[in-house]
Length: 257
Image (tube, rainbow, N blue to C red; front, top):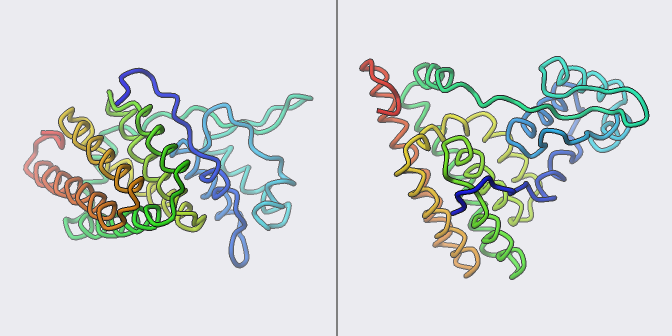
């Protein structure tokens, strides 16, 4: 587990999934949501240059005006800026971490049943990705996944949250399903920041990293059952922590105890 600033970056597969064509009649809201999710999760990093409006329209399979409206919405949200001139274009801006108090407010607003249901959905998707990755991973892919995890920084809560989510994205990429990658991105954008609230606790950070190591080892060994079980165990732990945090909030204590 790296203790230095991590240089881990999302794989090409994750980026390719972001720009995959939309199914059905694409709307500007769908394009904007795809871009927003990717930026918030770090798949599109600060400073990255987005494709031009014409290229976005081509990649997403939408009209030029749709791509232009979507880019405008993302710009208005403060996630990208457009520069003019020869070196111009639309560039991703740095985003602040979601304030913990807002995450706690969201946690307070969800019922225990809703939290448990989100965890079941996330766990089922992540476990399925891990199982498929174990079945399909080449030696090179397994080694890249292991190296990615080795270089990931879990020394702070913010870096741990980003890299814990990034690890699941990398597994989805190895599963060789762009649709699974996109669903991971969407679901993590919705639920991930709250799911990783537990990583304010150093003990939980070490535990999550150790569980991720076991998952990576199972994928490298092509042990689909072990990979699936490892992911399910982690999501079960995270869900239990969230439910306990929810109870503490209702009793007037801080979520992190």
